[in-house]
Image (cartoon, rainbow, N blue to C red; front, side, top):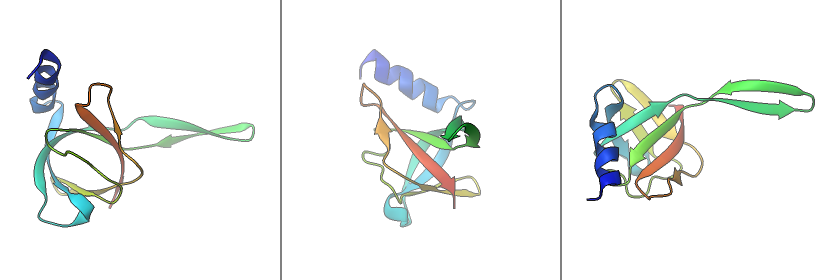
Length: 104
């Protein structure tokens, strides 16, 4: 393990940042245990001369927990259920996937 992987693990394991989740590939139980970081950035979309700010939900997950997340995967966090939408993106070091999600 290199220093970057160790740092990512420390961030995800921090109880103030990472949360326990069950990742269900293809939305099919039982799934696998994973640690995720839940982010809710606003995105600005332009419609002609008008801009609209839209809330989003992004779940970051380590590649060591989920090797290949995909559109349609389900994620359970505590009592909440989410569905991954679109194609996940991976960071430049290949350690963390970012996945857009919606409440299921």
